[in-house]
Length: 296
Image (cartoon, rainbow, N blue to C red):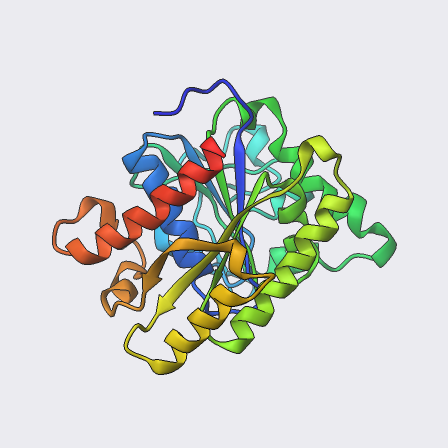
């Protein structure tokens, strides 16, 4: 267990290309930190697709749009408590911007909580005038995460982001202490990495030298070791003068069973004994990431 004597670490998992495993890694890094390291962890789902939220709580069709999903009524909801009246018993990550606070939901893991997403509400947050985007969106998440209540409660906060350069992604970068960039061994994913590096650079231009956004590295995910294309692209990346030095030594292969681990409310791989190869690979990757975040 980490000693709570320093600033809470905030990790953005990002790539401007979808389907590279951002949600997969957000989920497993958070579970690893909570289960294997005994850390108090908060997940925040900033992706309007809300895939991360579905993995931990019973999301329900939105009453206003059955094609979208909303969090369930919070287990601590008290209809007689005026503090709940504005949100009608449901809380989601967009409330950080709308009300200045959001309620974390418990998960099956004692040390892990989640602020779920809400498809429509998160998209609404980004609909602001260009000249207002920094003060109303980008800066606000950092302000919330620096609250004493948040800093004193959590050791690690993991932000799952959408594949874009939009205001919510910029807000995540601005609020984070660290950034992790997963990628597949395909050109669109690598282009997405270059885009996220630009997001990081822009975030650091707004921050003092003593508070720069640290890059954990680039993690190869969904690697098909028997595919010539993946092996070739991997070797090219290692030799790339810009990206090669950022590549992490661990990688995650494209195991068929990984899809099962992402079923809604699937049992954590860290609590299973029937996936030994997969668990070992994920543990090594997550352990390396946590060590880099907390030990530098």
